[in-house]
Every structure is written in structure tokens, then in C-alpha cells.
Amino acid sequence: MVLTKYKNFKQLTILAFGVLLLQISYTSTANILSLILQKNGYGPLGNLSIACVYIAWGLGSLFSPTIYKRLGSRKSIFLGVSSNAIWIYSSIICLLDKDMSPNAEIPWYKSEVFGYIIVLGCSTFNGFFNCPMWVAFCKQISSLSSKETYGTYFSYFWCYYISAQIFGNSLASLVLEKFSEIAFFIIMGSIAMLASIYFCFLTYQDDAKHKNSQIKESLLKGSNKSSLNNTKEVQDNQEANAVEKEIGEEQQSVKQDVLDMFRMIASRKMRYMIPQIFYTGVSFAFYTGQFISFIYLTTPANYTEQQQFSQSMGVMSLLGFGALVGALGIGYTYDKHGHKNAAFQNIVILILVSIFLFGFIYKKSYDAIVFMMVFTWGVMDSSMATHSYTSLGIEFNDSPIAFAIYNTFQSLAVIIFSCINIAIKDWNDLAYYAGAIIILGVFCFGFNYNLPDAIGDRPKKNSPKQVTFAEDLEVINKIE
Image (tube, rainbow, N blue to C red; front, side, top):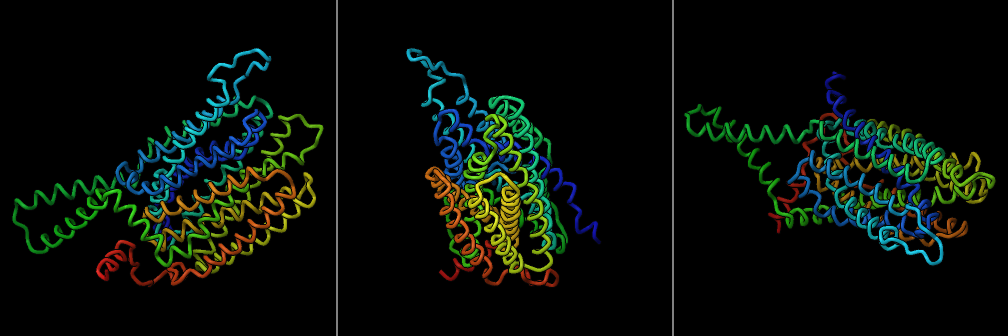
């Protein structure tokens, strides 16, 4: 019974390992990018790059259901992972040696303007193709899990995703201590390229689904030429309707996909979930934009710049350890005790985070408070993200539109708060900023706690038939 319940665990692990490779390169680069580019004379380019990624991500989310349905998981994932590698490599142009003598002419490919154009252009490309990639990942996890294992499967996947904070930041710490900054970007970009090749050799659920649809369609065409008994005819008609529905969904226009997306945003349940989804982006923007920069200021003054980079990135590994705890904890709570208890758990974690965050701001020193701040933030970040992904899958019946909405509002938050990051100059600014972040978190988690008629709070067995969003739309259309 237990083996049947977790029958797709091997496939999930294979998928999650590829995401681990991808995130090792992406998260470590995102964490240190702003500081490295600022130290090399490019001012706010690092923050602007992150913002640009998420601007494109947010806009691309409007079209990501259509792109995913047209390309399928394999191509969507390959394009998304490859775009991450290109984005990482693009920062190398900003680190090329420049002749600083007064009368020296700087080649066009070493100019600051060219650096901005390349980095921001690659950031836009990356952000756009991240959209269908993450829709494909979420659909794969949903296809592999059952209603009883949603929380467990998403939290297990999230453990791999967030373990990248451990391995990626530890690797970054080692590379930055022993090698140059250019070597760091080359190594991380190469890991992302390796991940894109890895994903080419995986088997995806929609590959099999598409083949089955073609087989059914050919069988149904052949059945029209032969006489069948009534039972067989009924079965074929049912299969024909299923195939027709699948083909119809794949051929649905971009306009209709966008309209469906806005309708889902306006639905009652989604309105209660959007604040927490938004806060996942707030969290990402805050820790990538502020943690490294201010931890760097607390490292011993007698350290070299490379050692300071290394120490700062080493501390960020604790974000990954905390995230493992958060993902496993929230998955267990959701599966065993339901949505409301999971939402309450997030609020408790946020209160704990605030204690260590303000302790760090008050002491301004490199000690145990720094480690606990980073660790607890990792617990909170993965807990709310895993909870959000799980709830979307359960409440909206694995709809790719729901996961696209997640990308849209997370991206919007990252854009807004990455721009705010640029204005944070000193410890006083950070204190006010952190206070606003914590208050916003309480509001967002509290709103999610009151999700109406949550399917996640119903008994897992003998629960009523789940109504899909497509069926909701049919009812709305009839009423209108």
C-alpha cells in the first residue's frame, strides 16, 4: 500500500536532481551578483539585472501556459535552463580588465554601456523563458503525485531545490577564495549548461500523454471503419471526447489563455492566496539584495576582499539548511493537519525570524545571531513557498494557469523590492525596511490562513469530487 502510494518517487528524484544542478548555479549567482558588480564599478547593475529578470518573468507569465502547451515540458525546460546559463555568462563582460590610464581608449566591448546592454538583455531573455520552465516543473510534480501525497512530494522536491543554497553557496565560497570572480561565473554557467543537457535525457509525463493521445486518435479513426458492439462504441466515444478535449486545450488561443488567467486571479480562492505568493518574491528580493551586502560589512576588517566574499557566501549556506527544515516541516503539517495549521505554522516562523533579524541589525556583528538569522529565514522562505505550490496544485486541480499566476505575482514582488533595495544605503535604512517587510509578512500569511473552503482542510479520504477550474468557467459562462 505504501509502495503504491509513493510509486513515482524515483521519477521525482531524477527530476529534482536536475533542478538541484540548475539552482546551484542560479541562486549562488543571484546572491553575490549585486556586490560583485558594484565592487567592479557597475553600481546598481546587479539589482537591476535581478529586477529585469523578474520583469520579463512577470510579463512572460501571461503567455507561459500557451508556450508550455505548445512546446511541452522537454523544450520548455531546456530553453529555461539554457537561458539561465546565458544570463550567468553575461556578467563576465563586466569583469574584463580595463586600462585605467588617463588617455587610454576603452574598447567598445569593455565599455560600461555595453556591459549594461548585455547583462540586462540576457536578464530579459532569462526571465521570459523561466516562465514556461517552472510551469513545466510544477506540472511534472503534480502529475507524479496524488492528492494524499501533494505536500510530501512538493516538500521533497523543495528539499532538492533549496539544497542548492547549501551546495551552491559553499561552492561559491570555495571558488571565490581560491580563484577569480571570472572563474566563478564560468563555473556556475557551466553547471547550468550541464543541467540543460541532463534534462534532455529525461522522460516527461506529457510526452507519454501526447503519445497516448495520438494512439487513441488513430484507434478511433480505425474504429469508424468496423462494426463494434455497443459497449465498445460507448468506450470509444468517451476516449474520443477525452482526446478532443486534450487537443482543444493545446490549441486554445493565447487570448483565451490570458482571459482564463485573469478569471482565475479574480476567483475568490485565488484572491486569498495571492498575498502569500507575492510575499515569496518579497523574501527572495530581500535576502538576495541585503543579506550578503550587510553580512559583508560585519566580516573582520583584516580579511582580504576575497576572504570577505568567501565568508559572506559561506554563511548563506545556512539558508539552505534552514530551507530543508522548513520544506519538510510544512509538507508534513499540510498532509497531516491541513491548510490552516500549515498557514499558522508560517506565522509562527515569521515571528521567530523577526527576533534574529532585528538582533543582527542591533548588534551589527559577525556572530551566532547572523547564523540564526540566515537559518530561520531559510526555514520561512521554503515553508511558505512549498505551502503555496502545494495549495495551488490541490485547490486548482494542477492547472498550469495557477502556476503561471504564482510566477506573475512573485515576479511583481521581486521587481518592486529589487528597486527598493537600491535605496537601502545604511543600517538605519535596513532597520526600517526590515520592519516593513515583517509587517507585510504578517498580513500576507494571515490572509492566506483564512482561505475559504480549503480542499487541503478536508479529510483526505472520502472527500467530495474536486471541481476543476475549467468546470468553474463553464458554470460562469452559463450564468453570464
